[in-house]
Amino acid sequence: INQSLSELDASLRKLGTCLTYRVGSMPEVLAQLHAEHHIEAIWSHEETGDRGSYDRDLRVATWADQEKIAWKEIPQNGVVRRLKSRDGWAKQRNIFMAQPLTQPPSKMKPVPSIETGKIQSAQDLGLEPTTKTDLQIGGEKAASRTLSSFLDNRGENYSTEMSSPVTAASSCSRLSTYLAWGCISMKRIVHALRERQAELRERKAAGEPIGAWSKSLRAYDARLSWHCHFMQKLEDEPAIEFHNMSRIYDGLREDEFSQSRFDAWCHGQTGYPMVDACMRALLLHSWINFRMRAMLVSFASYHLWLHWRPTAVFLAQHFLDYEPGIHFSQFQMQSGTTGINTVRIYSPIKQVKDQDPSGQFIRSFVPELAGVPDKHLAEPHKMTHAEQSHSGCRINKDYPAPIVEHVVAYKKAKTRVYEVRGQKAAREEAVSVVKKHGSRKGSNDRNRVP
Image (cartoon, rainbow, N blue to C red; front, side, top):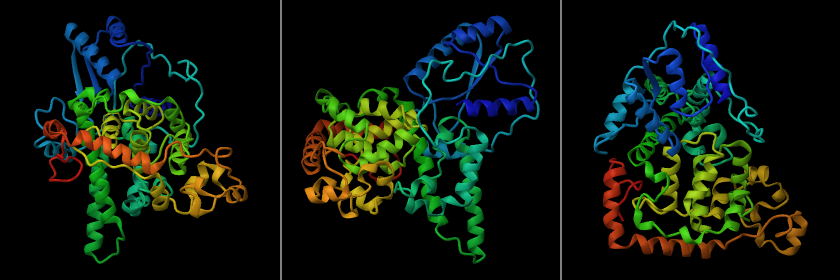
């Protein structure tokens, strides 16, 4: 945050003004500024945030109305506030994205005699220094460099390399953090993507080879649309941050929460190498790719039978690109509580074989498994005592045994979810959920009435 603010302040100073910093609660901070300088209007970005920001906005709206101060919120993406119906939403989103980019002013007038305050350090705010490493750099310049490197170079094999944690860190766009913190706009990314696609079409028409670019950029374009699609869900129903999107699933997991299983999952000590490697990578770097996020959530919700709310809060505290609308919508989708999406229970064993067969990623973050042969890496607990000794990885001493048995946990979870899903009431409620939140792009499995 401070990297982004410092860069923004430097840019504003070139235009003749600067940032003003305040620490406090809303709307009390605004009230103090109003008393000192008389606020004529408030301009801000339009946010689809979590309950804290939602309640803050309600307080600010009430105060601004009482003071007869106009508050103008500027849309930032394809989310439509006060959407009446999901029908036609995609068209509205695409129209917004096609609009010209707003150009910055050439000059700005500073507020006279205002005390600017100062940027707040972690120490100022009573926060402990971070122990995370290799984090993305904040600011618009870093966002622009990341966008350019993806569209010009890194993204060619995006469609085939985004799923594996071995290749995803470089082949994914890595723009999610910059979108979440407002360092770059969705519209700017879409415009840059369209320009790159047009360039590639011209090169192809001229007979030049363009490799896998077309397929990869189509896949990326779809995910940019999904970004807005999932955020719209929280905008339309803020309460899904806390309760099941389909209320028929209330009570499914709430009374069976296991603190020991939760702790093992949080610390990457489940005995499943891919799960543990992903969690440890996240705790260290604050980013992992989408498929591995889905696997972490699936494993917690199905294999460990943990309710999604505590696990969602934990991961929200560690994702540098935490975006509430996507986060809670996806958590419910991967936990099977939307009632309209395909139930996907990831096999942590299969994911090793599919996404990291040589153990490059796993051994980087779970060094206890460094000497384990590739053939045992997905299930090191199945090694004989002699093999464990030879590999330097003794189960339950150097590395934990699986906290649940995959086959048993998988079957039990699937049975319990489908017992609810098969009820008439569940099918009836699914119709309502599709009407409110479902995609309108045909019969894809992102929103299917069972």
